Length: 469
Image (cartoon, one colour):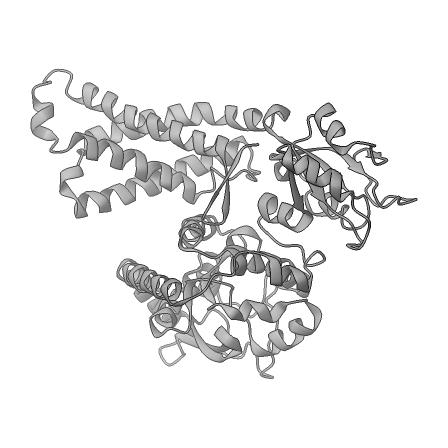
């Protein structure tokens, strides 16, 4: 499948085309809505709309960005037909709210309630009708990148273990595993294992292989370097297995990460310009969020007081490990009983945890308990986007069990993060290991475009309660 790299992120061309198509549908829906609304008085159209192009493009952009918020342009989307319709409906509902706010800020773009309503109905039904056709299109083998995996040992088998679902493989099709290491018993169970061909370039041309993925257990094994160079010069891509996972899955398997990778891999950007830009975005967006969320925060505080009593604490300050390994106090709405940790020891949250109050269950499901962390962002202890901060006792334990765990402290912790929008709620060491693989991806590829994408995807996490506990 054709892919593009935008600020370090992999974007698949078919999904960009789907977005463009739906953007056009929304714009045409506005034009149809205007014609229907003023069918008997066409002379009023010019008087009613100050900037028709601004109004039309604003409607299309806001509606399709709202659909982005609900994961409808993700290649790994696994929701069924009902899941798609639910997300389209939520996307249009959120888009309607966003439109109202936009019209308030930019009056010249105002469409009118009648035109907006008609346009939303038309675009909703057209997009809802076309959506079921998308996945069958992108799952055609003709659109997938044809791969040959160089190796068939434990590392190569990581593909089978970590990319099992059909949704995980929408971007590629494995033609063969090539047994370069001459494994007597290959570790891969799926796919055909073949002996090394005499000419790798001839093999690639014969089987229409577009990319070779190096997946050798022993990096010192004799690679057919001359043949790989020949393939590379002929236009056939050659990449390492960890780069393959980075592109296809958005995480970095820890069993593939080696010290040399940190030295030679690209990314890991930092510097004064980047830090200043990220800080500016943090302050601006946090200010907007605070203005929008203060009524919710006030109601939450009142609800906690009603349930627990006026004298009970509303907020809960908890020590977490932040940038550079320094401790700071993260601020949250109290969602557990006051005696939740009587012994003073950190305890993983569990499903149906008896320590969670009734109000706490609601605000945790909607992630409202995290809103006071906006103040941590203003203070500079946190960023809006980054790895979630953990408690010192957990960090001390996990750093001894999870490779490269302390590297997450090279960036500021975040209110939300790549792991939070990509992986369910983590409440165990195994979950922490999997989430760290996503956090490493973020540390390597962090940029403002990725931050914006994560913030948009957080809307789905909050409204649909993904991973809340």
